[in-house]
Length: 147
Image 1 (spheres, rainbow, N blue to C red):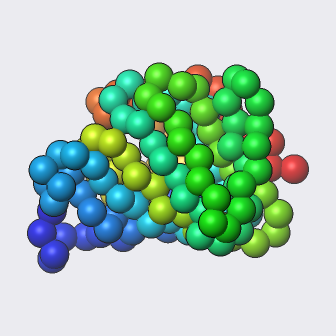
Image 2 (cartoon, one colour):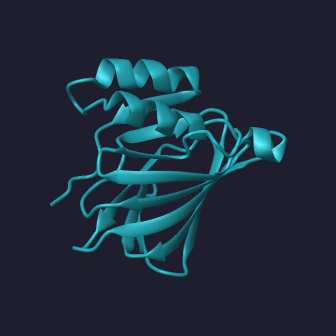
Image 3 (cartoon, rainbow, N blue to C red):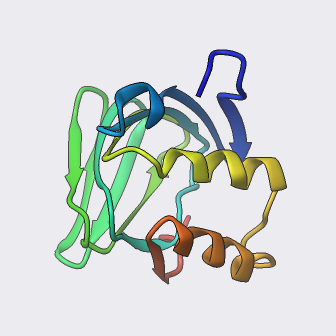
């Protein structure tokens, strides 16, 4: 991705900025800066191809796996290996900012595609899931309850 390409998009309560992309790292990883509004987070899902590491810069984020939930705040990190079903949501009443490293890179392009098309959940879930499948992502359940 060259420096003139679109690097920031908004989708479903989150602003994503691609800091480093697959082409810029020779495929090794991607680095995404995201700011997510309170109560927002993705549906439960599994990555076939990527490990994810989340570093919380601000706010509180509740992460879920089948083993339970954990809330992480500024200065804390979470690692989600590929193949592990997971999700997260912003807890509390303040937005959360995270750096997310995807290893290897490639999935970061999905965020740009979703933001460009302004897909909605649950109305456009079929299209969203179809696109995710091309990136090796399988949705397995709903987002965490925002209440």
